Length: 199
Image (cartoon, rainbow, N blue to C red; front, side):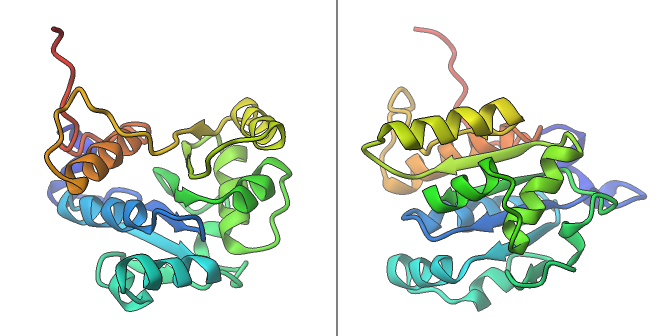
């Protein structure tokens, strides 16, 4: 693990990672990122859309209370005055996991009408990592154009595509490897990634 993962031993706490859960399928990715950050002693701030709450309940039978157990703070999606809405708020980066096409569209269009979109816009203007785990398939031209635009603006487009060279034994193995790869983009070595050693 790198120095960022040892936040508890530093005199100054490490800046938090913002984790957003939107309404696409795959709420497990957001939850596992929050869990990994807690295990690494890296603080997190969570933002959940209304559709994200529904997906969390439907796919994992969890409520927002489960998020509160993992994150330092959970912000109301409507609170555009919350800490992550300002560029002066120190953060290591932001991961949207999963990222719906609606959320992708708002980010690509700089349509910062809620806290998730405003926080993402802050990441881009402050030149901080913004990872979008876009969850949709199949993709039409409009989806691809949105992802291209977001990438050109500085986003990392990281669809949760499983890696099979790791020889996963469970869905959890697949999810946690992908989570580790997302955290790599923030500069955090979670220890979840089985690094390729060659054939």
